Length: 450
Image 1 (cartoon, rainbow, N blue to C red):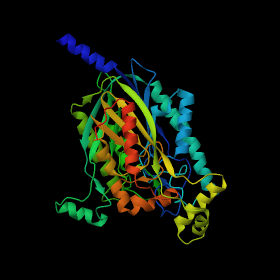
Image 2 (cartoon, helix red, strand yellow):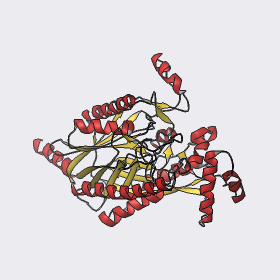
Image 3 (cartoon, rainbow, N blue to C red):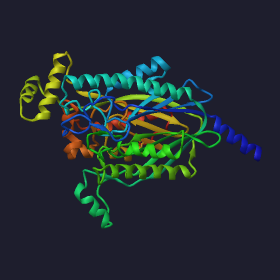
């Protein structure tokens, strides 16, 4: 029996290899900050560093297939910049597109980069050039982080854990000013939430933590000031790394597009939420997790999410000269697209990336995805599933059928700031779910019957 236990333990610790790295991607010069339309000046300093954290995994017996997560302290990354990053990683490290997940924390205290929320920012030529230069810098830093992670691959075990953390609030269903009083009265807050904290840990045979991936479905909008800051996700990563020297602890944002950390607007609160999330992860890791068997498969499919009819050129010209600031900004950008020979899209190619690790499924969705998807998609396949968002291409809010019908910011008006020509059309939820099921099937998951 002792020999058998030792053999099983040996296989568990030699089935996987993991390596990790962390790079500082804080801008080296003043830049416009991403996430809020109301800002009137560039960043004035740094509260906490912005980081790129890379975690590389592969099966020891089949090293050709790899899975690399890059967690970025950015509001988002667009399709063009994601393609640049992935091409660099393919050229330098031989990584396929489906083997790399670019997961943004969605902090609203990072720099404007690429075309994400392109109608929101009043950039002059100098700021646009700094944004382009930062994109070049980012590609290089991600390449270095991934290269370092791959060079540090070593035998490990992989385990899956789940905790719980309660600070996320459904912002569509609750008035921000009333949240504290409702909690103090012991009453429940309204609306769907997902307070689960999924985590995956890689440990050496001696039990030392190499890396942790952990997630939470909530906006990183505690702060709105003029300093670079990774908000609560960054503070959570820092707390975990401080208590686990040498480990890289990377945050992956969940489907929290309609969730806010409340109350908010102070650094003390951002740190408190980070500490709460880190404690949830630590508690989950202190309990026995599910050991992941040596199976790794990856897939990437694209869902043609349908859009309503785009405005005509004449309508765009009228909007461009109108008094609605952000509608005019979007119209000017779309007219520039037409002048460059582009056509108005009837749908959007939405990325759905799936990894199968043992009998668990990890899915990365693009866009700002509302919590309804987190709650639904786990029921679409059998076995444990972790659904992340803000990955590979953050092009818009992704409403469920319910939120699309209700309208509001997440259901309609946010499309203005993202620069898409129209709102999503009925059918967006089922189109995304179908792509999720297809990606899950490609990596070997069993989809539920309908």
